[in-house]
Image (cartoon, rainbow, N blue to C red):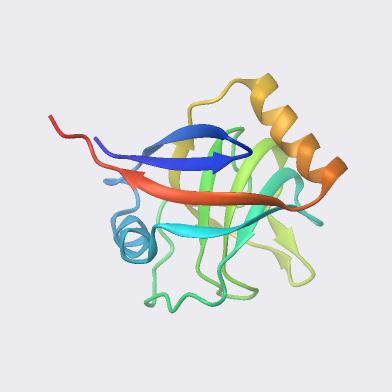
Length: 142
């Protein structure tokens, strides 16, 4: 099984990829990763962080394994149906939305992080602002 890796402030978080639940979204991510960007606190969605990916030319993606209410640790790929493209990391209670209203993102992975680790990550972006982030895929070599 492959994993998404999120490197933030010299810390690496791993996320199990949900290949069978969101195959087209995962395939699209494989095409544009690795990625270096900024991790920001959400403005509208509650306890979450996000990475803006509007500069990436994503293919037309269907809604697959999509949700408006991601669980703590869920990683969503939002291909920009009604708002800018992004990767959202839910760190606590989250209702994914924007000025355009509620949004449904494709659940592509789940972070292997404790409740406390996710709370600290969300608070870091809220307190200190944008954080450098690198997102990549680690393939299992078994």
